Image 1: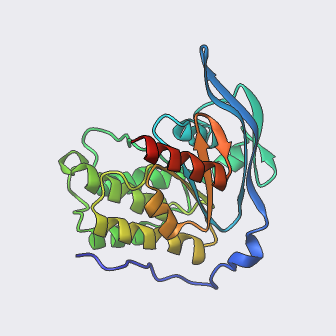
Image 2: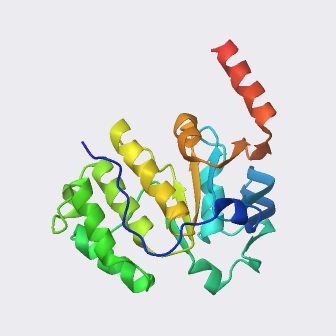
Length: 244
């Protein structure tokens, strides 16, 4: 069983209290439609610097669409997204983002090691030695074909790549899917170390509220394309439980 993995780091730890009031990602009145369907409606969020921010929502709430908008994969119909004050699309801002989708894509004959080489071409700060270290800790053979990995093994490999990319911002879509409980614990420790030791901000969208409670310093709630308060979310969950 894997123990908590923490990469040896140089330099001081991130001062969370000092950074938490900085607006690193500002989502301002974002609306996104698909034909006649409104996926997101006037969504506004502020994600403070140096936090692990979790956005909770049921399937179909619009979580994946929102994270793709932040990553620059999609374009909003209205509203804007600013990263460190720079309005997307801004090339320098996008270079500071590592986006990890729910389903990862790779070349057919890719190995775990060539995945690292691929990301290093896009992220000059990619830490290859740390990446190889994490592969070893996860029990993943670096020269094995990715196609031979299970879903959970692939997820671990891409999490390792995300941690080592050297970007300021890490966006994770359903990062806990396909992972056994003991691997989730290790992933939680990795994501925490990415913030406390490397001065990064992690944004996670998930329907795993229990896991987000364990790791997140900030949380938001999304339901049918709209942001809810904590009370509104609790009332919604209570009603859903009563109707079940």
